[in-house]
Amino acid sequence: MMLDLGKIQSIAKSYSPQELFAALVWQRQFNEFDGEEVITDLCNHRNLWASFLFAKPIFAPDENGLSFGGMVDTLLAMANYRPHA
Image (cartoon, rainbow, N blue to C red; front, side):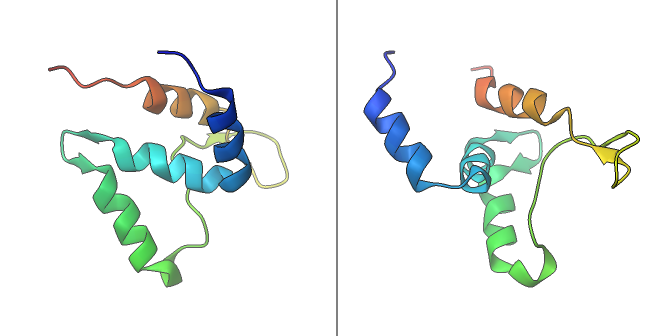
């Protein structure tokens, strides 16, 4: 599959990182996890969250006490996940 640079540029300019990440979550289904349901619930209950991030927080000596260094690994794993047929 060839990448369409124009399409990638258009998507990158049109959507926030959170929307792009939500789209990745939307596509995923495994075990009891249903990405479409998760994102739908988040959108239907906006009063319960300001933002979301699927990553493992790791203690680090930063101002908030948390580091999200594993976020890239999480994004890559979600982007590359292919269910076993």
